[in-house]
Amino acid sequence: MSKKRKYSSPLVDGPLQATSRSMLRATGFNDEDFTKPQVGVASTWSMVTPCNMHINDLASLICDSINEQDLKSVLFNTITISDGISMGTLGMRYSLVSREVIADSIETVVECQSFDGVVAIGGCDKNMPGCLMGLARLNRPSIFVYGGSIKPGENHTDLVTVMEGIGSYSSNKISEDELIAIEKTALPGPGSCGGMYTANTMASAIEALGMSLPGSSSQDAISNEKKLDCKSVGKAIDNLLEKDIKPSDIMTRKAFENAIRVIIALGGSTNAVLHLIAMAKSIDVKLEIDDFEKIGVSSPLMADLRPSGHYLMSELNEIGGIQPLMKTLLDAKLLHGDCLTVTGKTLAENLKDVKPYPANQKIISSLDMPIKKDSHLKILKGNLAEEGAVAKITGKEGLNFTGKAKVFNSEEETLEAIYGSKIKSGDVIVVRYEGPVGGPGMREMLKPTSAIMGQGLGDKVAFLTDGRFSGGSHGFVVGHITPEAATGGLIGILEDGDEITIDAEKGTIEVNLTEEEISSRKKKWSNPKPSPNKGVLSKYAKTVKSASEGAVTD
Image (tube, rainbow, N blue to C red):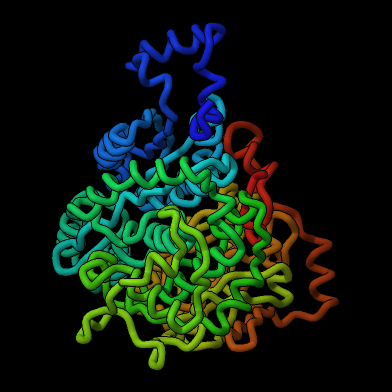
């Protein structure tokens, strides 16, 4: 048995496996194929979203590159859903759930079919952590390929432009015709949302982690670069098989620290906290919510990228992608250069010959003059979040906020209030029963935060939730509040008018209530929102851990 065929050999070798071979012949296998290592290619292709509509074209290139290396590719599919399409609806409850389904399905197919190696291709944002969690559980030679970013829309627009346009329309700042004009031109074709939203955040994290080929995370979906990325996979996976390099060799504690520093430098999504913790759990690496605060103290924010900044991922790619940024961080001893990657080389070796950004570029600041000297991802704790909350504070919003609560038990109630111009300067918007259990599913609050920005209230109100925020959300936002309302968290007893103070410098989030008042309200509390009693959401609510533990179902 070949060392590269330790999984497929028992499946297809010898007279007793004639049945297996017979079925595989029907799929196109020939005599020679049975002697080759088998590489499963997990495709997230779907026509439900532009993020993934081109993925099978990339999968075909990957399969060809694998077959050229005297390996046998076997293409299979897994699901995707669209956050952007379902945002603000009950369908969004399934978004985070899809991460678990993707991981489970990849594990299921690969284990059952006994593939020797795995390549996974992801587009929309839950694809990335879902694929990595599956690859980590399997722990056999693996590579992740990012489907790539969408190109900018007309007048430098994107999906968030459309959502903020709705807010502008609701406050009579633009007409319906102007809104429709943005809608029709903001998304010109295939690819994931173009800013440093969750998809590009996670793609960048995975490249920094060492699980994708250099450059994969910043490339446009429709480009020669992305085609070359896919065509390079065959040699890379063959090398990993030959050397038996597995995710556990790459996804180490130090590699996760690299990923955290890179996404902080890029101004990445709050969802990265949730997903990186979940990915680490899948590979048995200890990573906790407090680690983001500890690492963040010495991690500067350097990228002027949307949503808080001006530029899109395609523009960063034009000046070199994230590789020069990582080289800068490595030279400053902010990255661990000895971490192994899917090239079979260390991170330092991969970055050795990377050239710096052009001198006149405006997207990435220098280390000595960063946009913010420490992380924009702040872990807050206090009586309102005893187990932690995740804030996105770039400094543009200020570093602290005190205001009176306006409490809502769902995203729908919140949107009705925003569109009805019932939110005023100084309000602290509280949206609860949207956590992993309470949702169920932990919906993203992009639609309400975009509406707030569109109404010009982004720096005048704060927004708190036990749900999540999209990578496209910005403003003074605090999510992942744990314990969540549905499990008895203090957010569940808040009332309109309660004074809430958020202090990003001290890392605190507090409601100004006496212990006596808290105790009295807790005695009266009951969950107003029944959980589903069957189906996917019911299973999820029964098994999911808190957001501070990555909202995993293991």
